Length: 118
Image (cartoon, rainbow, N blue to C red; front, side, top):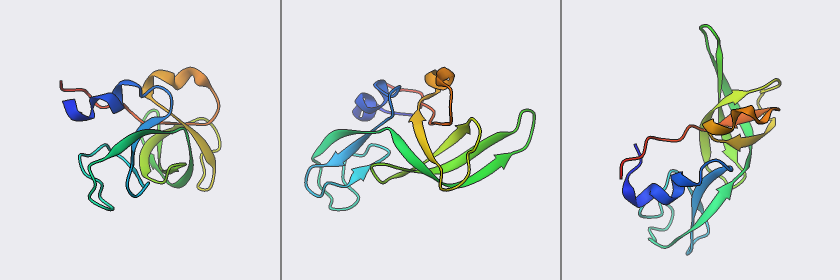
């Protein structure tokens, strides 16, 4: 569940994935935090990851089966997402979207929005 300090990062979630970029060391951080895990700074600027590369996949069996993947985003952090569309193999470049954009077509990685607690 997302909390009030991270709320701005989840509200604009439908176009890529909103992340934080540390102002001091320039490393991207996801999920949002109050302190950079790389340099311990508390100064962040917003950044959006819109593409990624599939690193690993796993298939959840059932009806219907669901393909999940570890996606290294274009900003660096890895996210776990549902892969929708044909051709979701490791090494494939993929577009990152939130759950309300599934109808875009093509190969996409759906990163779910967390429930928001204000």
